[in-house]
Image: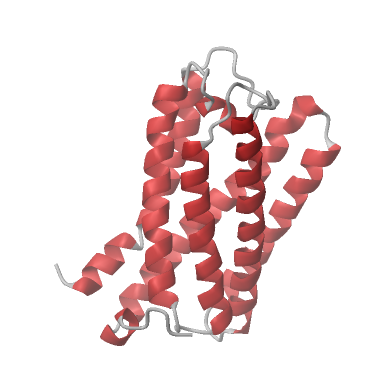
Length: 221
């Protein structure tokens, strides 16, 4: 298989990762009797004492692997492509997915909710870092796409996702705790779905624009 086809296939890993993510949520919920998605965090499904940990963790791990491979390829390919905001956006997005995968794998919640253990505190640190890098990356993508000639629609999508993220953060702090699950899902699902959209867009872009020079653009700013 030529390198062009390999990149085209890997560009779809983000979308495949989205499927694994929602399988982790759907199957995790089925194996967690009494789980309340309106009030509980998604992370409860993979908590150390969760009855759904074994099943949910498998699909969460697959989501992480596919998303990290996709994001690294995204950064390598778009390093020097289109414009600098998109280059830096893909860089921050890549960092975010790596932090998310390693951080949540190493520091799942010790139990449902927040028990305040070292493991739980590190889980919160990872969450803050993921949100920060996500906001920065999507803001850069929004700016980069909007100033491009052909991809303004991706800029509009990026802005909508950014607004959803901000809304989710506000609701997490404003809504009663028994509605935490709704507010968190606005945040998390926005990021996951945006990853899928970015993946499909990259696949289309690669098919049309892939050239050998793109492969050699690594570390070029």
